[in-house]
Amino acid sequence: MATPAFEDIVEDFEFLEDWEDRYRHVIEQGKAMEPLDNALKVPATKVHGCASQVWLHPMIDSGTFKFDGDSDALIVRGLIAVLRSLYNGLPVAEVPGVDAGAELARLGLNDHLSAQRSNGLRAMIERIRKVAQENA
Image 1 (cartoon, rainbow, N blue to C red):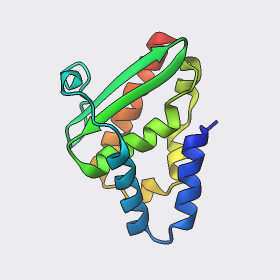
Image 2: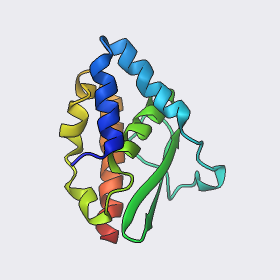
Image 3: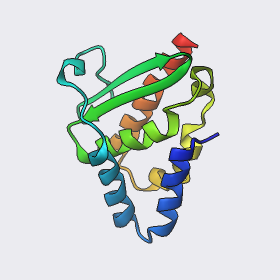
Image 4: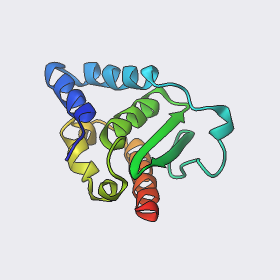
């Protein structure tokens, strides 16, 4: 059920031998994203439960889900980029059915994130699912 963009990341990870290279790749994904407009960094878009500052701005256009996001931490910004590749472009009704844990496990993220980062990642996924469910 993963998008082609997420499959590209999975393929990239298969070529990266160690976690440090994968970690750098995630950070590069985040650096490549356009920054979220400061006007969108408001309490309504802030994700609670993250150690870092995180904002997600979901959009639904003609039944298609998309979100932009930002963080003050490079690795978290990279995780947002990975989540965007997983969810952006899906029909909004399919978003809650994505097994994000299983998809992210394909990248080995579960084994290499701190407990705080893992909690923050779960909080972002919960926000994405909630918005999709409310708009499906």
